[in-house]
Length: 116
Length: 114
Image (cartoon, one colour):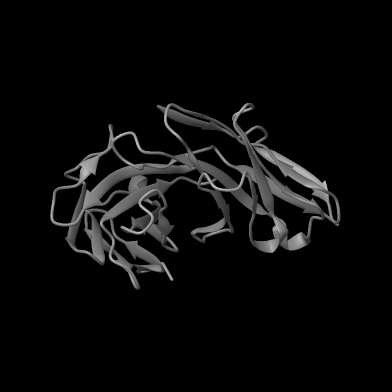
């Protein structure tokens, strides 16, 4: 139980285009979803927290207009990187939290974004 | 406020030797503590978690950790390292202070020598 999927697993896009990453909780309802960014050989950096049906809360220093987060249902959240640039290349990981264990997050497998 | 310190960004052990990865935490609320393992280009896999029940927690792949409140520690151990244990390990703390955000440590890269 508590499986989270991400799609795509890797994506290459050209500079200036937008790319969408999906995060789904497959077997539970996710009251909250989190989006992290991980730089090479570094720890996870929380970008934003989203609750179903409400606006995402962004961490300090994260551009909300560049990283659009939508949490339209209890099983789906999307991260759209708008007008991507090479410096946005990174590993993006989502996680989800359910009602049963609100203190625990379940992580997706990650999405490798490369902007050329 | 919460924080996590992982001592040793790189740890090397011989195959068959004891693995000890250190994690110290700070938390103003009762903590929940987690250890995750990450292989290259993969997400995080939960090894074990402390949720205020037993202080000695057993996880997958032979790992265990002991919650020591007096030392604010949650060190990860495994009696005998295997080559497949080579990976990045993250300690994380969570706790209710308005939200259950995770605070991650900086990670420890474990190298297993043949």
